[in-house]
Image: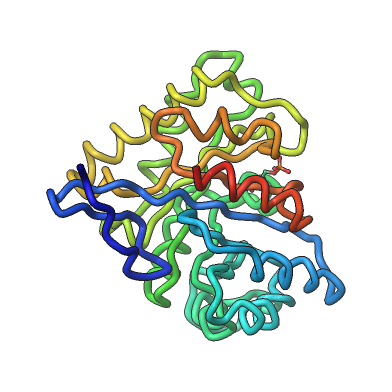
Length: 268
Ligand code: 13P
């Protein structure tokens, strides 16, 4: 009989067993995108009051809400993150926010390279790599996003695209504590369409192998999230796919009631 040791901290990405084995903790990450005003703090209060599960819970609101949410969630199981940061520490970059500022506001994680930033702001893999380094310098865990377009999937180049994005967006020095990778097929975001479970498994197994080839044993502990139209109805089956260690959830993370169901399914 394997005895589960107590989880040692909110950012511990895996549980260890006396035999030296480990199990990755699932991560339920909500990306609020450009949604949420002060009135939405009630959703966070509800989330923060839920009974704790073994699933790590993260909400990445717009930057205007980070500080208030972090205060509400202090001493609870809910962590707060950001959706982007600048690659520089400070300087003449009007309108931008540094990783250190996010950290000071209470963020523990930052999403980087989301396809909406790659698309809307022309972010390159190299820029995302630099932003990841900035995040690490500020003690933030980076959630680096990768994913293919519908055209690329139809052309059969999905794994080539994901491999190239992983190679160029993730800097040397990744660990299970400072990196999470999210696979988000662009065509599945906000569309209600999801890949088959087999297709998700193929990409996640490929990502694990690619990270292992580059980073060795530590890659076994890096959490790999699926994102794209995840909801309370499909989370259980997606969560059961090999190498899926959680979800990066958009629309279904905005209401505590929906997100609670996702957290509960991931925590099974
Ligand atoms: P949806 O869950 O709304 O499809 O968004 C996914 C996403 O982009 C999360 O980062």
